[in-house]
Length: 551
Image (cartoon, rainbow, N blue to C red; front, side, top):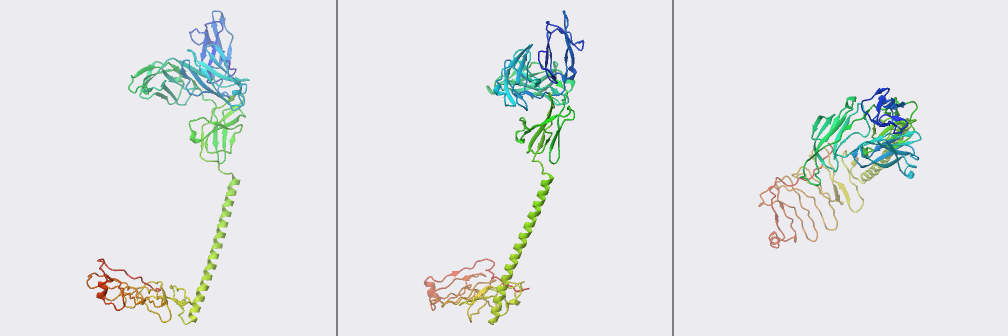
């Protein structure tokens, strides 16, 4: 065996060489074909390839070489970062070796035809790290097979296939799994745009499409065949109107393997649990994580050697089982949109906190309510005291007036009295306006006003000024009007605004007149001190506010 694997895993490419030159090959004692080759390549082996091999020449038959193919995966993982194992000839390809342990003293190899070469990777790039990147160059017509190993433990193998054609058929990096979907893609290097493609299976056309891919819904053993594609393409980035080219890829054989043991994640209210029913007994489990926003990228190691995960954040999680010299396939991703729910102790704590918060709210509410009641009681005592004082001075006992509000009464030079609602209003109740009068000043709104009700204006007798209430006049003809303020101050007189005969409207107002007390109207007109307010032309004037008594 040229590929000195030690243990052989499902999906490996195995290379056997007969030491005596070209020969026929036997598997379990039977000839594998009539071809005579010194080298036998077994791509993507499975348990069906387990058995013993011999080569037969004119000098005789070789000893038996027994191969046992393990259906599970190796514990270390080697991948091509471009995710395409078909590359152009003499192209360098970037590979990545990953392990959940330290990579110190690991060695990597590449097999070219019948020769084994060790890749020179600096030790300081591997010590203390669990991943390393390195280049492998693809040469010749035989695949370049890369793998890494350390003390009997090794990675999977990667078979790099080279081509000198411009059109490539992209196949899966690892063998297709029976029952899984598979996509083959026709590609052209240099960023060419593919306008149409034709796909062939064993030389027979199977699909003609304007796309660049061919899909197999579920892989089966009958898909283990040779495929190629033809592409019509154009390098539009160099010349948008360039000539349309046509090219055919090299044929590629699809490798297929059985499904390896696969881990499974189950979730309950508080934890995620990883298991592997088809794995060997007593495996250990590792967890991997990526944020939901980085979907499509790889997973990072999260937790090692535990089958349960109880402290996790929102994101996607997968797990894998490990044992001596083997590993399972990754589980299906589980997307956790939030952190795990609290434990039963946490739930009890939350309930207790809610109860305490409710008690605090109730206590505060009752305290505030009591304070408001005390404040209201004190106000009532003050108001009643004032009412009693008013009654003692000979006034009416306003406590008997339900629905009415008394104004404050002062003992200063001016008193403030309420405006009683006038008779005949018929309202549900009203407010009394604040009136001011000194002893003997009691003018109010007249009972004969044409409006529905009114307020008595504030009357203050201070020095020589007198302010009378606004009263509607009987000759207005409008729904209501206002009487202007009258004042006796330095012989100035303010008279009621009244509609004039010339207005013709129903709600005109006579302007305020100012001047000497004895000045005739004509003189005031001549001096420009008298003018008329014309009729508004509207439906009416302004209604005075109405006061209403208790129903």
